[in-house]
Length: 423
Image (cartoon, rainbow, N blue to C red; front, side, top):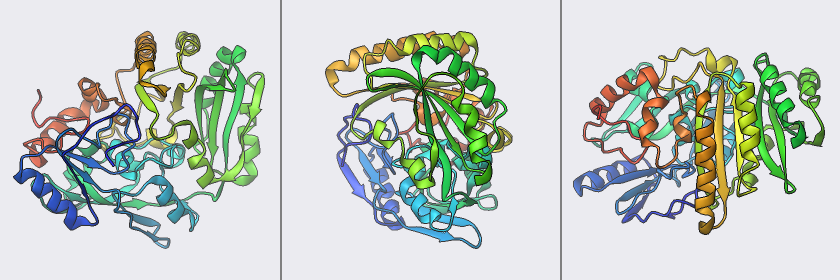
């Protein structure tokens, strides 16, 4: 159980505490403090940086804490910290409701929520953290407290984007929204010869896309050939679905049209197979203010130089609801730059690591002229702690002050760490 999603991560903790309830988590925190152990917190274990595991210390593992309760009348759901998105989605979709999540059903709800939460429904309902109503938190001093707009509001603010820096969230209470059960989802795959044209059309179209339609541009390999995939989720009125997505089919030579009506549950797991647990992965990312022609040319050129046809480049378009929240309203303040770039290197053998890491780093360096100076904390890799300030911008100093209040000894440091002092 020391293995996490990213096969590059190979750490050996001294102990793993498999917690069944709140009392177990409290006991584990107190044990780690008493014995001066480094503590890592595992929810879903899907983070690319592998922060859920540590060397020589104690892993506080919440993966057995799976309780979920849905109040369909009040449109709220409560879920424990070991729940995965597939599990929460199944419970809420039984009532035709959903919490805005990500794009991978195997991700834990804890990490995605605490880091912000971009996903298919962000245009309609905002980030995951925007839909958090309350949390139960185990603090660094071994106390169990509630956090909400009325209870410990400063801690509640920090939890919505500040990652695992401020405590262990053992349960989350979310606002639910009507979604599905059917949506229009999937992708249209275009021939790579039309890549420049397709990405320019994506840029022009995304800027005026309705809140019910979220669109990503992806550079991937399909049957051994590079293609541009325009992935989409339309969660609006069924009678408008086909007309809304029709423009996505008019941008070039189509290799495959996989865009169709499907259950929301299917969409949420549609891309899991491309990112299986155990595959080696490295990532570089940043936000961009615009997707210019120069940026598009570099994307198209560099992608085909990848040593591994498992790798991918994703440009997410963040729009409407997620951008309407004031940057200072939550710790997750990345609301103004609409294009989120992820360069994802995937490969299978350790001997392939130098080539793939070199490609990823060279690609990322070439894209730096278009970097808006912001990075999504959930996309930071294990060697990118120096970029944490980019994840919070003007909110960073407030987070440092709150870290000093809630965790002055930096007990929660196996994360993309916000130090209690500005070091």
